[in-house]
Length: 311
Image (tube, rainbow, N blue to C red; front, top):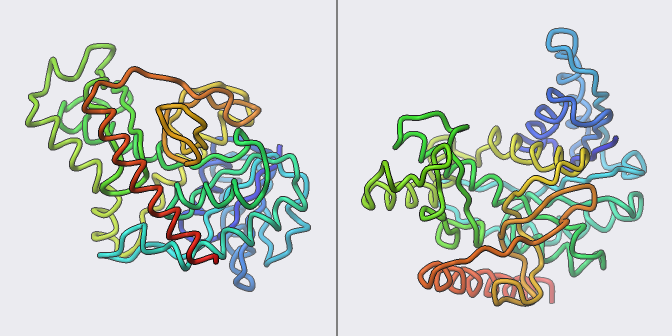
């Protein structure tokens, strides 16, 4: 099984790292526009093999899309990362042209691939990929919800003082500091609602911390985070390649689901060999419905900004 990752920066390299260590794919190709950069990352990763025991073959290439041919999954991380004080939305004009060109080049060589979009603003870049490639909507997946949900579970685990792996929780809506919706009402600790253990004040703080989780890390690191995004991509790719049919919050094109049309936004999905196998409908309360509609409006405004940038 072959996976291509475009962008050999921190996020792309962490994706390759996580996929290889977990043995998810037999072959990983890392592609970057910078001469020798992907080759160096691939070599560095391959020199871990004897000490960590993985058997994945990792190859780095400079801007040669022919080497990505026949990939089952392609991951697009290319574009500039956030800097402190910068929103994901501010990246639209810079990253849109990059993502569109990359996606079209990948499609020429891997027409049957499932596309996983990581580049920010992620929902809008997922929408751009859908509009540019002409693929069915199940083949184009934005990964933001997987990452946001992992951060939500982390903050819940800290508040509970319990292991994150014992916490079940999901974030839907846009992948943005003001647009994501941590579903505190539905979060649970080993099947018991977290509201049995945490006050509403505590839950509100967890939700607020989750929403600025990326910005918090950007402020600390001076750039976007990479370990958790890389692990989130690997989790998603694993469910695709091994047909695990996990329920993962992903950005996907909606056609009436959740009262929305012609927009890519995060909702729970079943992920398997066909990409998006099913969009799962969950019963939101009135407040959650209102928050989702507001989030969709914000994402749609970004899509309109995208159209103005692309003419």
